[in-house]
Image (tube, rainbow, N blue to C red; front, side):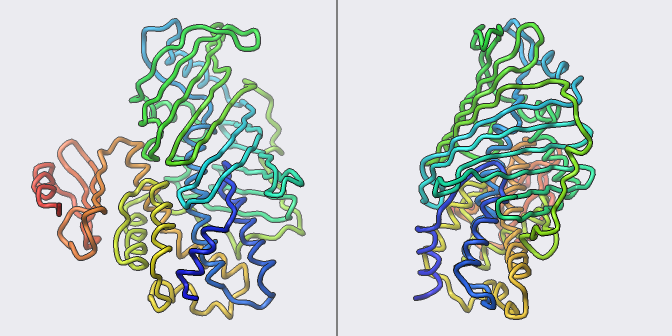
Length: 441
């Protein structure tokens, strides 16, 4: 059986559960791989497939939920209703710590074609000067127990730490300054988050009552809310008429055949915070998923180019689309075709593995595949920041050296362009217009 057949079989039979922390499924997949291989086995095609897919799949799922649900204090500015949402923002900005409860249900099919049916619930505590702690509970695939994960986002340490007590494992992800700012915006900084969604179109839902509290509702179905993730969205927020603070938010998303429903409720404003809450203790008998800390992919031009190059090296072409969900689907689809084990990019994954521990092998593969995440995250950032990005991987190939592959605005009159040869230049808007006239049809 050739490598493509191995990978295709695993795509079809591998189980998938999506939730807000991207690391937990990686834990489970690596554990499964451990149980199926002997102690001295080197990295197999099966584990390469699992490790390649899951960081991308989980990161994308995390991004979707982070944008749409963890940032549960969803606000828009505007006029024409009894509550000015700019005033709601001003109220929230005065609060240094708050908490809320959340539930999430994911169903349908993932971009890889796998069936999904996952429910979860959890709590989130946010302190503006300390970070975020999220505790999530979800049933395991067999329904025999509830699996708990604790995730800490610690800006002071520039790290995300995830603990999984049931399997005594942890993961530490290191973040760069750019990603720290983005996590703040997407996860818990209401002011920065508001700047992301200013362009959303919304409407008032009028007044209602939630648990005896008079509230006013607002709704958006503007796809700009997803900031480049693709799909359809329907988000509602209900604000206390008296305090002008959020009471509840609800989100429904459809991405391809996958549906996500989330509910954020039971807000506690100005809640007390214990310093120990944001000091995760890793017991001595816990094992790290990989040999040493892992680094999140950079969201910059260099990272995007590295991801495009890796994709082209693996598959001989560029991705058709760059939003994270589409990118995952393309990876799954392409691995159903012919994969040549003599491919230099694949050889790099396997060479020297016999001398590495299992943890070192895992870290090596994830580090190699990390640029693919950079590409999708960079494109999402450009969309969020309204840099007028456009991508032409559906018509531009690695052989089209002088054709525009990806471009985005850097000033009122200039654009940055990544060409088919993967070199980058800054050009005028007029020059870009001429270049885009000559794109392949």
